[in-house]
Length: 140
Image (tube, rainbow, N blue to C red):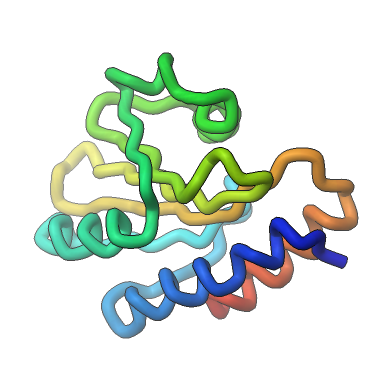
């Protein structure tokens, strides 16, 4: 059973997934428990533009140390932010939010994005339920 704050993410996720429809393919990244898409760096501006329409804050290696606790926690779970990587979030002041990790490849030819919900204080059952419905929203 999902709590009200995580249920509120549904329309945000559906809108975000819909914005990418037909543009990029999603798969499941079990390591980070995120939706994962890899695309050509030629699509950088278009993909980043969509993300910036749906996510309100952006953090990088130069400013993440001053970020709110929730950003710090997500960054830590992803192994930190290296130069060129970004972390974009919906409203991190809410009990549940959306994050996107933007990771350019070293070769410069591709970029990976990983998108997932983040909610503090969920029981194991609620976290599992959120993961299940999230995967459904992205059809992965």
